[in-house]
Length: 320
Image (cartoon, rainbow, N blue to C red; front, top):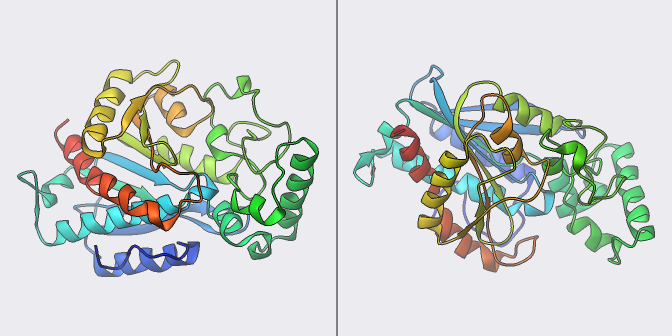
């Protein structure tokens, strides 16, 4: 694929994302709207690209989000490439299995949140020196000292930062949602590079932004991209939309070749939206077969397995 967003061997940074989002909005002004859901603690935007068929808001919508875990930043590039592919096909009036792409957005909007955790991504890619806030830089250094003392890491500080999974103040965003949050006992009791649930559910600006979005309109589905495992999680304890979520999972695995699995974690975004009032059918798609940060050599396989999923799920939404 060639275009605004392309496969390359270097990092896909927050600034690459900003540039590509702005170029997509310029190239496709009649079918995109670029907004921010809010700012992170280090004053980066949580960007949202809405793909739409009309200027007004439609009644139903689907949301794709990625890079909630910092070291999984390659998934931001994946979502951006998926969005550009969809927009190009929409603009050229191409068919998806006999259905015009333009018809897919007639009654549904698609919301793309490619990098939910830009502060964490910045830490993983460039280290604490790239953070604006001295307080956040100090938090990351304290996390390293405490994780060393607890035996949670034996890595050098440089490698520890590359493996960073949390947000800017050491909270794992995918354990920060009100989905059995109180019963999470497996992670550390302090801020860390990974698995700290935070002081309370929705304590972080990133998780609040996603929760607010999830409660803002009539969502047909949410899709969360993570790494790794080449599998699809579709269930959770108390899932109120299990049948619909499983149907979505079977559609995705039929395209990607991934396997399905139930979810045993707690505090995740998918978990939260499946059990909340007005629940939403949802999936977590785990891409890649090697540990993150994902090497460029792995990305081609990931793209080949996922490039059609946005269109397929939009078509599913349009038919349900």
